[in-house]
Image (cartoon, rainbow, N blue to C red; front, side, top):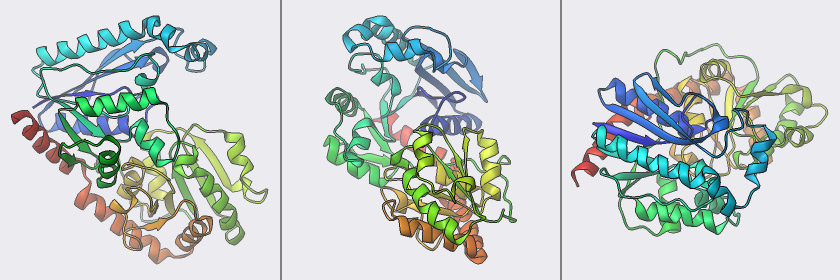
Length: 399
């Protein structure tokens, strides 16, 4: 089968779970004999090659906006970001999107694409200065629910900008078929967008090959958090809870991997006693992250809103005991006290208690490690995911 993914955060470069998942899925599809092409519309500062082949996946990166070099912190990019939409759309916005659509048509035609998949979050939609509308292609367009702008505004009780909400509504109305990464996300989207189409649940999954090593010997009292350092991910709650953990275990260590947010504010949430125990590690490679997770006492993900996060999957795959959010899709991955613990991100005391419990109970660590790894192997391997995707794509193609 020939598959085209529309994705504007394909690694390397600044990417999140969507980009990582498209890469992991794309590589495995190629390995199983399918043709995979990824095309995205990127700002110049994203960098990376305009065209490359990544383990058989063909990747095209088209550009929008003005080119002031490849450093995101260049103040000229910040200036452009504050320009009104009606001006910005003429600063290569409409031209870039027109070239983008032309490229998609070309790929679909030349490569005999069977299915096009697009996520419901596309960063360029916020930047090019006009509402994005997708034309018809000579292949069905599948919209995968991985967390749209409208979805996260609803989840965090924020009032969104109508122009971006309208972009989401237009995309869902345009979709030839729909899939979602969790039952929870699908139920929220059905309420928000009032669609009548059937939805295929295709969970995010993970590779379990030689890059992921399992270490039975864990570092003493080391907890890991991975994710964007914003309130939605529960980092504020975690740091407040950590102050309580240090009262019981003054030698415990918290390693935080991820960027974003206000670092000075995050540090201000820590007591003087706990500051030296918290390490803001910034961004790291997946290879190093897997190594760190495999050696850690546990990993914690106290998010307020997720669709089906990749980070807990990565931890479970390495045999790292997981404490996960009970909100959103958290219960679709973790069964409390069986393959991990569940916590309410608003309950600071509960978060602290679950961390303390895991730190002091080696048998619990072992139980969560073994059961968590088994959960991945039974339900969430990339090999199983590819089969589910191909079955779904085949149905769509034949309609």
